[in-house]
Image (cartoon, rainbow, N blue to C red; front, side, top):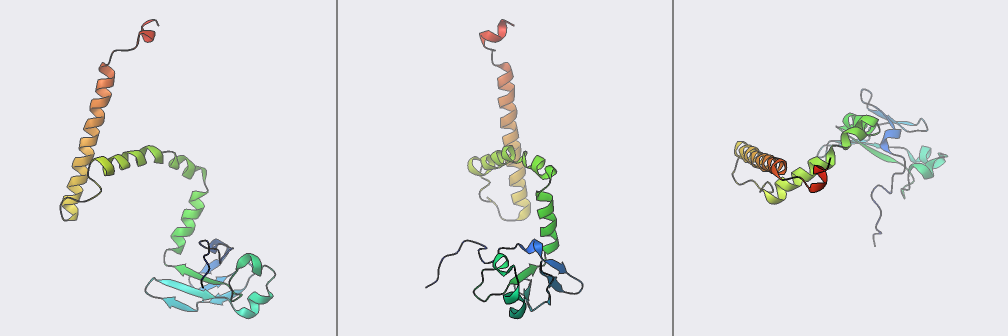
Amino acid sequence: LHTLRAPNSRAVFPKSMFQYDEKRNTLTCPQDVTVKQSYHEYQKDIRMFHFPYSKCTKCPVQKQCTTSEEGRRTVGISSVNTELREAEIYNSTKQFKKDMELRPPIEGKLSELKRYHGLRRARFRGIQKFGLQCYFTAAAVNIKRWIKVTMDKLRPKPREAWAV
């Protein structure tokens, strides 16, 4: 019987702690053990690196590095590894947090477009026709918004505001 595991429960040390040398096609673990690529999984475009049993079983931080039943660490490096590392660095900056403050209002508007204005499915075939559907839907939502703002300006103000 298979036991259920939490995602990534096998690898405790993240891949970012391993140094990947793209030119030499090697990977170095936090304990300075360097290995060459074991094989390339072409279908997913992942380079697999297996650290040797002899090094991993004697390693002082093996328990923090892996919980694999084999007792060694295997790391897969994808073709977008560099971009992922850059994204991880950016995600820890103040600029990222500032940019993420813009997300909730945008997500709400995208939800409205999808739920109430038909952007869940393309009505016509083809990228260009779907692009037109997106533009027309966005225009309709902007007109709806403009009408609401205009109506709010025309609405009489409450009596408390008159006393000022």
